[in-house]
Image: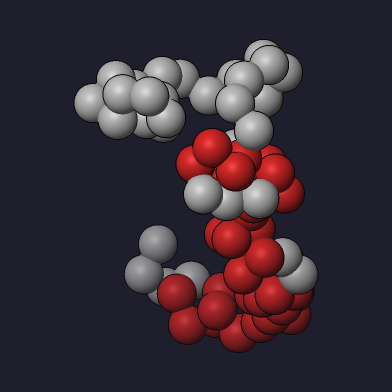
Length: 76
């Protein structure tokens, strides 16, 4: 993250460390907190739809196992 006084100087972000307020970077404090956790947008997409999709695939495989075994049983 660039420092407000010198944009060419980068610092690591520590959520527990005191630092500049968000308005020094042109954003609100809430937006600054959200930027500290980059997995937020990904988790909004994956949860709950990713968990539901994964569960559906696993249940489908378990229900179709006898058919899959009949088709592939001679191969293996």
